[in-house]
Structure formats: structure tokens, C-alpha cells
Image (cartoon, rainbow, N blue to C red):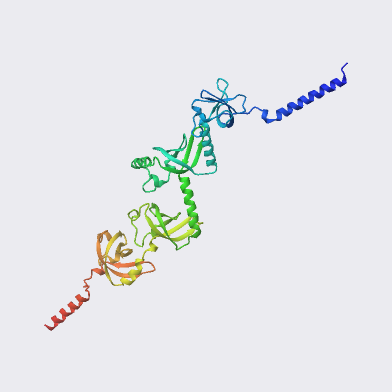
Length: 409
């Protein structure tokens, strides 16, 4: 027969034992730490012997640091003592001997990768130093032992192309390579496009920095600029229909019709990318997404001179600029052009104006009409051919004297 008091005492002991076991298991300090390759953990130096450091990181076994894994620019392992706390990188949770392999050297590199991950997450600027160049772009140093790549397409165009505009072609490629080679040793501010630690792949962009800077400047200019304001800018692009100008971060178009009061035949002969110009703001719409500039409105309008200098009936010199089926266009002076209608080319019937005049030919023409509203000169070639004598005051006085002497005789 079992004594009831004895059974009660035994149950009480078992209950207490299980309670203590639960308490032990709940205490995280007794749990074996889970460690994976690539982790950075804190440990305590428990032994230093023959170039091998033994570290307790709370794992099932102590870890060892040896050989090249001891080398670090930020920590001199020879100055360590037993009991020191250090950060270590987990190379292998368990090698072929069952040992935990740790590294001081890789802790620095891992910390650098962590900093880069934060920089990408927060879109921060990363300073990079150009180490090498190749056909695709620049290889850069961004940390001790860490390299990245900036593709040519992600560099500011002014670094790569003399014109500041991206170009293609065999000749261009060789010139680009020379410019890339010249960048070795330079520091470039970049942002991270792609980051893959496993593949050791880092792609960077300078454009993401410069574009953000331009956007900030553009926003500042938009706050204060208004139509009719005059801004200093730079030619950023040339097209058949006009030129693009970046003025204080605000890029806009100077249309062909706003380049000059004179007729524009070839924009390329007038401007080059990078030229400095002054422009007048003549249009702002869609919150600054559409900006129109003018260059000619900052120049004197030649029509105002024409009205004061010329009058209907004057015979003036000009140069044939263009021959068309209905007549010929004549350039009288800078910014001043007129039309000789086919009916005003000759007293005879003209079927083809090219039979009478040709481009580049200098001619005398008579002004038939001046239209300020239409900015139009009506000219005549045939009327200018009528023999006339145009004399200045002295010549006129001399001619009158000669005529009087002749009458007297």
C-alpha cells in the first residue's frame, strides 16, 4: 500500500522540477543562438594563441579567427586581449571539422555593404572614385575592397561627349573612350541603381544626382520666373525646328521662328551646343512643362528701320535667296526680305523665274509696297531696270550747272 503522504511529496517534487525546466527553457540566455553565413555578431575573446583567436558568440561551439581573416584596416588583432568584445563575420557556421569559422576582415566589408544597402534604400549620394574604364563605362571604388560600375549611359553627358549630346558611331566611340580614360582618379557623386551582394554587383548612376540637382534648380526658377523675363542660358540641343535652351535649370524651346528676324536657313551655322545665350520667356504652361523662349525679341526689329529708311518707289540692292514657281525671294538687308512676283520679273512673259534670276545673284529692285502688319516687301525687278539716274546732292547740283551752261551756249 502506497503511503498517501509519500505520493503527495513525490508529485510536488515533479511539479517543481517541471516548473524549473519551463523557467529554464523560457530564459533566452540558455538558448543556443542560431547563426547563418554572412551574419555579423558580437563575441568575446576567450583565447589568443599562435595567430588564432577563439571567440565565444553564444553558439553551440566557440568560433575561430585565423590567417587572412585576421587582417583588418579598422582593428589590429595583435592589440586584442582575452575578455575583449568584438564584432565578427560568420564565414561558416560549421566547417569540415565542425568548427565555427569567423572573420574580422569581412566584418569591415559587410559593414560597407550594409551602409550601401541603407544608401540605396534612402536614395543617398554615394561617393565613387574612378579606378578603370572600358567600352561600357567606368569601374569605381566605393569602399575598401568594394567596386561598382557606372555605365556610360548613366554618366553626365557633358563628361562623355564634347557637344553634351549623346552620339553614336565608330569615330565617336574612340573619342568617348579617350574621355573616359581621362576620368581615372576623379571622384564622382552617384546614386545606386542596382545592388546585389550575392553576385557582388553594384550599378551606379551619376545622372540620378545631376538630374535631381537640375530638378531642384528648375523648381526654384519656376517660383520666380514670369513671361517677358530675360534669362541667361546655354544651348542644350539643336533640332530642325529650333534650339533647346537650359536657363537656370528651366529648359525650353526657341522655335525656328523666334531665333532671328532674318530667315533662318541652317541653325547649325548659327549656334552650337554649349553656347551661352540670353532668352526672353514668351510662354509658360502646364506648370512649366512647356516653356517657350525667344532670342530675336531681344534684338532690334529690322522692320522698324525699314519703315524709316525705305519708302515705296525706292530702288535698292538685294540678293536672290530663293527661286520659286511664283517668283523670287530677295534679301535686302539683315532681317529684311521681300518677294518679286513672277509678273514683276520682266516686261516679257515669264514661264519660269529661274530663266530670269538665280540664287546668289545681286539685283536692283524697286519697292512696290511695304506692309508692317504682314512684314512684307513687294518688289519689282522690271521697274528697277527703267533707266534712271540716282544722284546725291553734289552730283545733282553739278548736273544742274552743266545743264544751265549748255542752255546758255
